[in-house]
Amino acid sequence: MNNTLAKMKIGILCGGWSDERSVSLNSGNSVYDSLIDNGYDAYIFDFKVNEFEILSNFLSSNKIDLVFNLIHGTGGEDGSVQKLLDDIGVNYVGSDSKSSELSFSKIRTKDVWLKNGLNTPNYLDPESLDAYLRCVATDIDPLLNSDKYSNFFDSSHKFVLKPDCSGSSVGIKIYNNYADLFCEYMRNFDGNHKTRPINHFLEAYVDGFEYTTPIINDIVFPVIKIETKREFYDYQAKYIDDDTSFTFPEFKPDLLKKIESTCLKAFKVLGCKGWGRVDFFIDKDNEISLIEINTIPGMTDHSLVPMSASHINISYIELIEKILSP
Image (cartoon, rainbow, N blue to C red):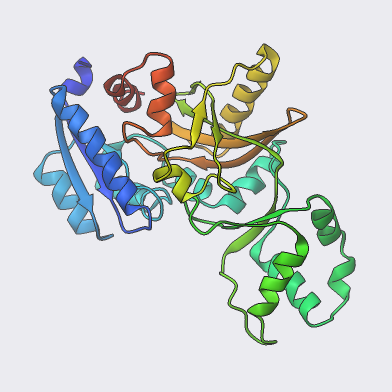
């Protein structure tokens, strides 16, 4: 038992109100059960409604010293809960409200990475994507000669449409070619209105393998290679399929060093701290393409962060103690 943590009342926030609520409840209950089983003074709270007074009452009535926020998605990872905790004046682990809000937006994250010399797939933001497709749909030419568009569409033969702010691969769709993308847009286009999901951007497809690595207190944990029989690592592959493969590849020392330094830099330039997970691809030329940051990854006993920790003989409760004791 960690002597410092043993003196604290630890509050676990979970649930929330996003489409990742069920995953969050599983994470929260897994951590809570482990803390209780190991003698810690822990309290769990299903924070269902974004109201300051509800959260404040839970924290004050239980005299919580430290919060472990495990609310995934909107509310938990976008800085909202962190702002409430700052206003209440209760300590919590993980990224603060500013870095959480920044990293929750995939587009803003990519912009920061690019400004800091980090590689991430080329993309079109929602406004640029809509403007381009509207021009094509209405036979307007000016934008079609723009290097912005020609460079993007020349860079990939497949495209990934994804929401700017969402997790668990919700709302992602892959188009095998530009024609499929345009045809779907035209089906939803009547000349004045479009039903394409708002706040979705188009990203160039990376032809390579998907990887993820946790970062805990500035230490890069073992890299996990993810392989699925589905088109990509979607919600089904994450939480339902039993044939998704998770392995720990052995990289050559120079490539491993590059991966670790790239992921740590990707985490830090966003202002993230404490713990999180970096998702990325590696192509046949060993080029690393950063995809996104998860500031509050899953923490069930079969989630990726505990899986990575277990690979270096760190038990589930030891992992929790490390996260709670930066």
